[in-house]
Image (cartoon, rainbow, N blue to C red):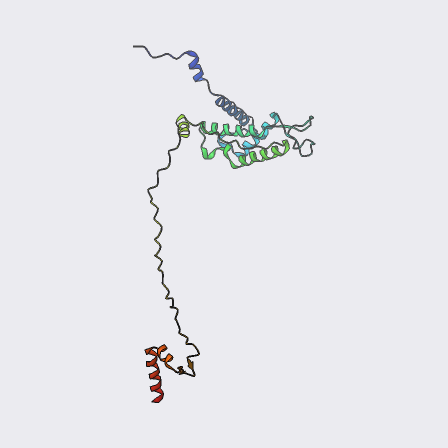
Length: 239
């Protein structure tokens, strides 16, 4: 059975070495402690307020390395001035903002209460906002808020995106058949029959009187029905 691996001295030293952020936070806290001790009169940490933090930030401007042009400077608002100018050097807004964040964390690590943290006071936040806006106008640089980088997608998410999506299930809904049309009723229109009218020849009638030619030829030519009609007419006239 093999024994547990022994950590190398280099690995133990790397583990004990603080990170860059922790080292910078310690230096900043030490600098702030010196400022409190050199203050006239000396200040205690428990009595420190947001106003004392503003004094500390203005005190650091004398060690700044950022050129901030004044309003009357010909290079005011110019991001890259072509020539030097007598404008003073200041602490950049980004450096001050990061410094306040580190000191705020260090204050709570050294036993300070979060509600009494002077580095989170409203006056400090307003001051940092004013410095940002004034330096943006003087230097001609727009400070944009950094967007949070999204973590890269995992292999399972990549596989899910690469896999083709299944086709949508067939719809079980059956379309209703179109409504049946009512049968057309054909109405037969009665067509009046064409009447046949007998128009007698004008030579046989004269003022409603039947004219018969004389002689035996007329008797042979006129049928019996005509004789009946003639008799009826004669009877009617005789009556």
